[in-house]
Length: 71
Image 1: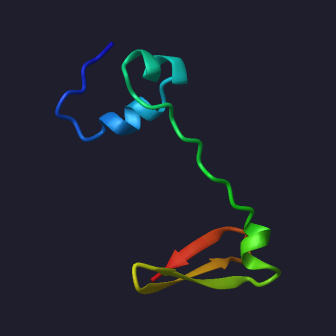
Image 2: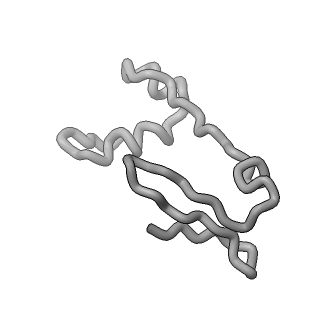
């Protein structure tokens, strides 16, 4: 196993390890990402406003059915 001491990417690398490997190293088990259905977010609209840290962002579905996030 490669040592990643002093490396900020350590937590990202550790998150990809199996829960058993993380436990063996004394690390907490990885928390699964929460999945949000885009249909539930957009509720039939093509564009929504997302407020993050006091800043508004536009999240829209393009004609090619892709997501675009704009400040």
